[in-house]
Image (cartoon, rainbow, N blue to C red; front, side, top):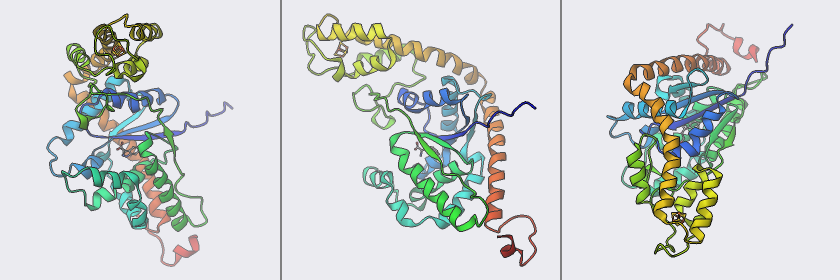
Length: 350
Ligand code: TRP
Ligand code: SF4
């Protein structure tokens, strides 16, 4: 008999529906996801409910933003034949599991989450003193555990959320799994190697700093943004030598350029043999050569948005099947099954 291949481990990750993605999203996450598609059974979703935890007051753009994220995923090379892509709110079982988890999660666990404290202190322009914002990591735990994800590719800042997910899984299993094997496995974070991607102002590339290069920026825009990008501050005149290791443009080269170009930049910058304008045009060349094929791929879906929506529909159908199966196990474990259970049998079943 032919031996059956061992099932692939499952990967689950999400991205908030922030609208058009930038190079930082690509280098920090998306590029990694694209490479995981064949090795793992991947579920990637657009976390629109998570977006609501901070942007609840105006939802007029939420759907549009979700679709923009999907288009950028497809542009970057996520392939509906090789991974499952969907929108969180299209699989309402996430909310059901979130509710059950919220019953067993001690408040202290949530108040201790580092991103909670940070964001409460840093974001002052909206009221984040809401129930939903505090419960954000509980929703994330439901997102992960409903698919029994083995691995969760995330950045450093999200590791405490995966830790909390493990604690919630353990607590659920302790209360409800009885003598049966536990309902939830404990997922592991897969740390995305954090390439430091600077924005045009030299700070970390981030939508909130307004220093991004979008995956959809056309060539002239990319070149213009590069022109105004900050450089090694010690290199004031063309004749001053510089240091690519302290220059944000130097960082871009290290991530996107080939070895020869990196070497040429290193020598030329340190000896004042090249000017920043020339150096930046090489960096722009590298970016354009990465963005061009993405924008080409994106076009097909932009011209026919129905195609993109179909991908979401079949993605949520596939995700929904897994989520429904998990919820039925959860209901059984909690004696809240939809199936008739004869009175008095609950204890006997244990
Ligand atoms: N919290 C994540 C972020 O802000 C997004 C997210 C939501 C997520 N649910 C998830 C990531 C589940 C991984 C797994 O980036
Ligand atoms: Fe930066 Fe390039 Fe100018 Fe050197 S030559 S300071 S690496 S932009």
